[in-house]
Image (cartoon, rainbow, N blue to C red; front, side):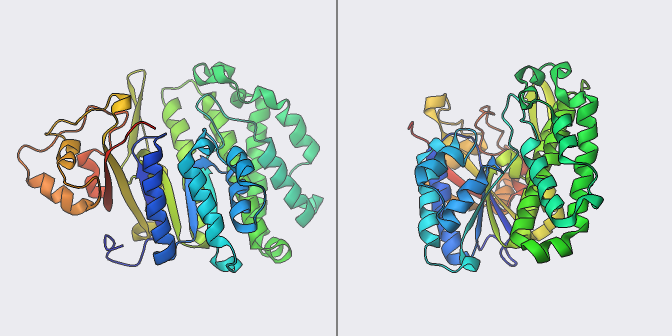
Amino acid sequence: MRLFPGPPPRVLALGEPTHGEDLLLAVRNDLFRQLIERAGYRTVAIESDCLAGLVVDDHITRGTGTLDDVMAGGFSHGLGASAANRALVAWLREFNEGRPAADRVRFAGIDAPTEITGAPSPRRSLMALHSFLAAGVGPDLLPCTADTLDRLLGDDDRWPEPAAMRDPSRSVGGTPEAGRLRLLADDLVALLEEQAPGLTATTGREEWDRVRLHGRTATGLLAYHRWMADPSPARISRLLSTRDRMMAGHLLALAERGPVLAFAHNAHLQRHRSEVRMDGVPCPWWGAGALAATRLGAAYGFVAMAVGTIRHHGVDTPAPDTLEGLLYGLPDDRCLLDAPRLADALAAATPAPRTSPYHGYAPYDPGRLTGTDGLVYVRDLPEG
């Protein structure tokens, strides 16, 4: 916490350099446990399906379901198979046992409910939003009926079309029905906000917040499908931007409730602009961290994570004139560095270190340290 000169950040984000390595998640668990116990953080948010995360939250706060069931249904992208994620959920449940509701740690997924090959139908969230409003405000204010939504949605199997990732013409997002659904979803979300005083008085803030999550998910998924159908050169950047805008919206909503610990890839949480290459073409976008930091200012803290070797993925001892090579020369297997001071030291170095060639697993570009509050370094990632 000494990395932050002012009050503890409302959102403290820890980035990971690559997915699928349980040792990095174990380091996350150690840090998060200490920050929960000693710094008062009460929400853990990770890069997983935002709707599936509700299953985990119900389990750790109310004991709903077994741990096996929660790991099977509460995570996306195969994250439920991680032993470190299982240990995190079990510890959160144990920590909450016997605590008053206001002091329990909450869990949230902040990712869109999408996979690399496509996105699902927005039916679940649209119908949840419509049902909540129909019960709370009556039919006169609703922009449509549930039957209208059902007709426009059609068969759910037509939405997650894997071929649309490469062929925009295969996406349902460009159809007149999808366009109409986008307008109706916007109207429903606006109605939810306009009627907030009466709805929260009747159902409570907790239920209203959950329906807000469905509203962000419905509008976000429809926007994602709209860009899946777009044939322009900006298509991939807009898809990436849409996903991270959803993630930022979830983070900001969680921050309204209290201090948040967030965990996702460095590219999602850093303050600098992110970029990937698709077929050799650069696709830039602003990640969720950059968007949240614009709103939160100093109340957003970002600590990147860096690694030395991942030999089972072909990442061997880094060259000494790289940032990774300099870190690899440190005496400890794990350490926390003051990123601004490290950046100053690198600026004075001759020659300046270059970026590692291992872009698929690179911990952090030295040029981006100036936008980073801290850097967690892990020397070696053993297989398994």
